[in-house]
Image (cartoon, rainbow, N blue to C red; front, top):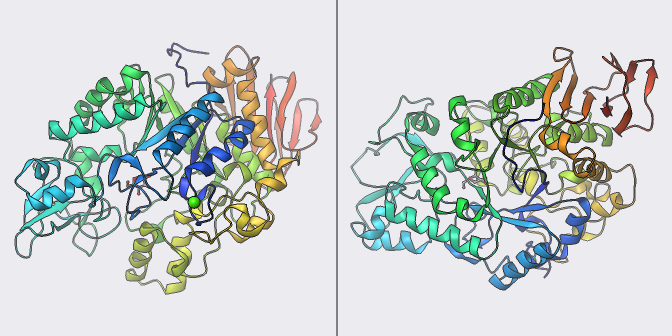
Length: 558
Ligand code: GLC
Ligand code: CA
């Protein structure tokens, strides 16, 4: 039954992630921009979106596509101006919409003032904003492997020191042990909240606490290095930083914050997203990380419908009434969800709708990633030269070193490439999918001729209009309480390729998905009152027995 959670302004909302570089280009330079987002606000409003998360658009050399910030107080000219940002916040407000920015404070860019000053004077104030160690011949301070490959240490230019970067070498880690650095971070957050932002998505945050004193761990590959998670497991006390950040910033504004949190321990969940948690919410990555391998992407194992179901239910059970998860099918760091969670060769409007409904009806805050509402799919990459993402380029090398042929390595990493999600948004079947009048910075998925927003707009059976229906159900005054706050109870959990669950509140809803091509029969435990959502025109039923069609999904009021 509904629960004791304290209601928050954002609970009943629907969120949407924009990757600005690939959303809509207003000036023909091939790069999406803030005026482009303003142009498309009505599209989002019409879909039913309330909260918009923007991936970074601050000044950046774009070594990691904006997740390397050189000025936290300015907009990169490629994305627009501060006036555009102010206008975006304003225009969103007019439409009862909220803007979140991305808070990237585990690291900055090596082109940030702080880092430049640290190079000039490593012993000075800014030297202690980073993790610096004296350089010793033939030995690194620790043997940790960066997320993007290679050691986490590089020479601090012009000095006899080295600096730590758990991501790319152009992303030096900030030293959160230093109270002066923390003050700078809070000042920046509050500056943006004062401007009228509704909150932040918080990037890579579990990395801010290092296990001290820094030390090496057991190597786990031939390179003699070890996975960063070995160190993170050992790092205690992140809560002190996160609690301080909440109290100095978000809490004062009743701002929404959603953490990119991996590997949290079950006993920590209340601290993270419970009443007075560090964050309002955190993403559920249980499905995302399924099948990943210590060895690299080339060794990852695909996820089956039964695995997908198990992952979703596991997270739901773990969180229960403690707080609100943020549910995703994909984001800018992942392949397209329809290409990943629907078995190969079975992607169709029906199966895409099934995935949408099963995910959207989970308890929590739904996030839609740009193009997901159109059923955008992975990209057929035919050469590694078509790939921009630094992470994919590294994983390609890892695969080659493991002995894969160049073709096999490409096939293996292309499936997981972050660029699958980063190709331009498919607005129409016109030139460059209507994304730009210039040359797009990243290739357009050739399937834009059939999968695009214009084609789906007036087609009542389109994937997009199905998303609209799901959103409308979440907002329908009659069902809202149940969809937002109702408990989740799995049913028929052990039935192969069937994912079904109740949402129970003032109403009782039953979500049933036949996660396969073959017809499957279920007998309802009671009769239903109404069909709220169906991705087919009819239901084949005989009394309480229903024959579900290929990838048929139903939301029934019981
Ligand atoms: C997060 C971002 C990812 C980025 C990384 C480093 O995981 O989502 O895009 O590369 O942090 O900032
Ligand atoms: Ca542009």
